[in-house]
Length: 305
Image 1 (cartoon, rainbow, N blue to C red):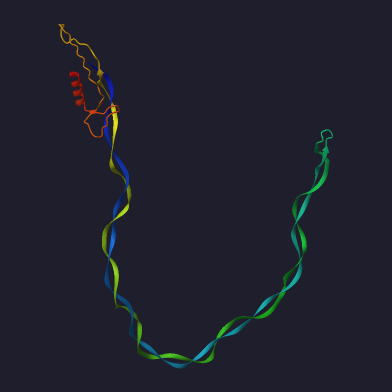
Image 2 (cartoon, one colour; image 1 turned 30 degrees about the horizontal axis):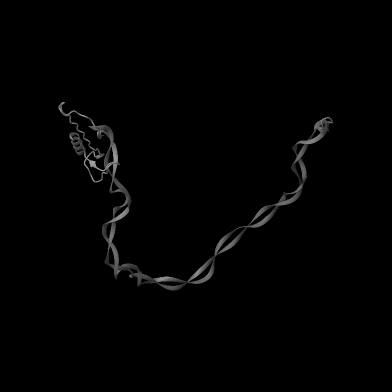
């Protein structure tokens, strides 16, 4: 008879974990780039051209003209002029005079205590002291000063002014206009444009859009799957652990008794939850991998023996 026991079988699954790596990806932007072309351009230069006009020019001649000059003639008058003399006059000034008072000032002496040896300052009397208590202003004679005073009058003739008189000074030659004549002269200049040739210059004829790399950004890039077998749980199942020998009466008591002893060897196998694959490996102690259906058929065939 087969013997069974409850066995905790681990449940394994194959998981595919995607693997990523950090990749620096260029970032592009568009900008407008100017387009240039060569072109010929006419050049001109400024030329100063004189302009002419006609004018009337005076005609001059020379003549003698008498000249006069202004002469200043003095005018006199009489006036009374005061007569001055000098005398001595006493002078005074304000002088600050000190004011004095008398006060009693204590006389301080150093006295040493014979018992303690400490020297202390004590007042042993007073003395009279004269001190300046303030000041006052007094008017005192400081000397004599010379003073000028009027002591009379005297008659004086003086120049009271001048008068202007005309005096003949001679002849001078004078140029005077005696008519006009017509004259052509350059009245100025005017600026004109003069063709100076052609110059080639580079000018902007438009723009074009240009794509340039403005920087980089970090992105996650898929680098493959990592396959690994992981245990997802356990399941309890009844497994045949062996056989035991029993004596069974297979027929009613007759003239003979037949005893049959059957011994079926047991083996350990690995049972896969799903379909078998090449990545599955048998568990330690087993060499065969069976699916659940194959395992059930093996167990049923062993029970039917």
